[in-house]
Length: 78
Image 1 (tube, one colour):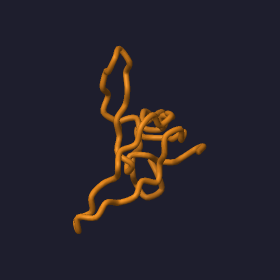
Image 2 (image 1 turned 60 degrees about the vertical axis):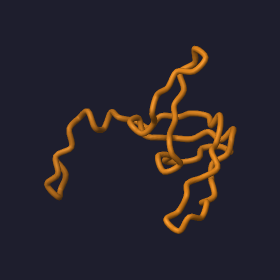
Image 3 (image 1 turned 60 degrees about the horizontal axis):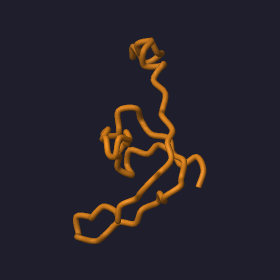
């Protein structure tokens, strides 16, 4: 339990972000005004992301993860 009274189960502290290398990047998200938002991430970047952020897909017998730029916690190396 924290000082503020929150209870954090032991399993929560074991969850660590995952690391991956960006294989492809889309054109960017559309804003509500209809303008394309630029991407901060590029192919080849090593990134940290939440374990539950990506969607798992299988293509050409390879397991890939698809996630939005908002699910990326940090760029480790560009």
